[in-house]
Image (cartoon, rainbow, N blue to C red; front, side, top):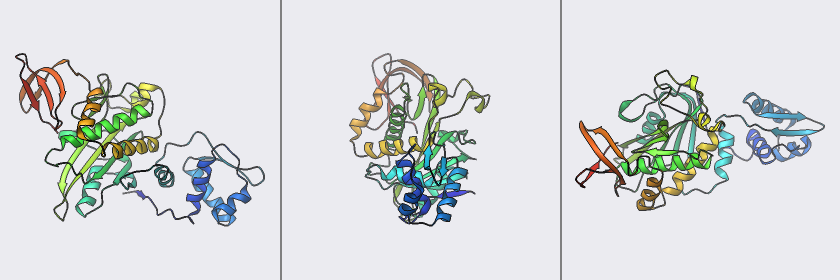
Amino acid sequence: MNRTTLPSCAASSTEFQLLKRLLANRNCKLAFRDLLAAVQADEKEVWESLCRLQEQGFVINCSPIVGISLEDPLPDILHPVELKILLARREFHIHWKPEIFQVIGSTNDEVIKQAKRKAKEGLVVISDRQLQGRGRQGRSWESFLPLGLYMTVLLRPKWPVANPQQLAILSSLSTAEALFQMGLQTVAIKWPNDIVVATKKLGGILIEIDRDDGGDWFAAIGIGINLNQQTIHFSESLQGKATSFYLETGKKVRRVELLIEILNRLDWNLQQSFGTLKSLWEKRMVHLNEKVAFEANGQKIVGRVKGIDETGCLLIESANGSIQKIFSI
């Protein structure tokens, strides 16, 4: 298993200091002599670090005479140093601790494994690829290519874990808000936790609740979003059913930027009352006040969608005016 975890990124880290300064001065020439002094490293260390950054996809123009600059576009890579820098630019209530994998079986499985060993709230596992990605009810989730965002966060919620649907509402709302902020104006949510555009699925949320070795509850919140896929990247069975940020907007999005925005929205929404989240969630809900028909727990349900209740259950109004609550995770 190939994994890159976030380093401590101490002030003496040459690569950290280089990338930090280059990102802060994008498209501007930095004098090589000043850069050497700023990172407090010798010339060989600096050139080796610059070469590593170039190998990873960063466009760096280097000249000992003219200077050094980081040029657009930035690569769509999950770079631990850049992630550390972006996290430091925001204020969070939760101390997010990302771990980056190149390939993993399942981000949820990794978080659950670490959570059982008493990992702290705020662990975030992200991977370029998943070999065993899954969604609700054991369905597989196509995540073999580094074209989407595949992540799981560890929360130890204060809300009653007996009702994980509230976490589904929190997570799907936060994800939709982040996508909207990134420019996807048509993003919506299909109860309980599908991220959609019109009738096509863009992403989904998988909530798994368990106890750690000390008996304390935790929640692993898996988030999978299709970002830069083209139609050809989806299996034949999904073409026409799935979509991506790129297919909807014609623009590609950097995964690290969406990751930061999702963490920002999760952090903010965790401080809000569920009543506030419920109101915001319903504004993004598809089929609100529309007539629907579906099966739940082997029972056919027909009625008009009236929103969700204070626990996150779907409210369906039948023909006789009665309200039925649907629970599903």
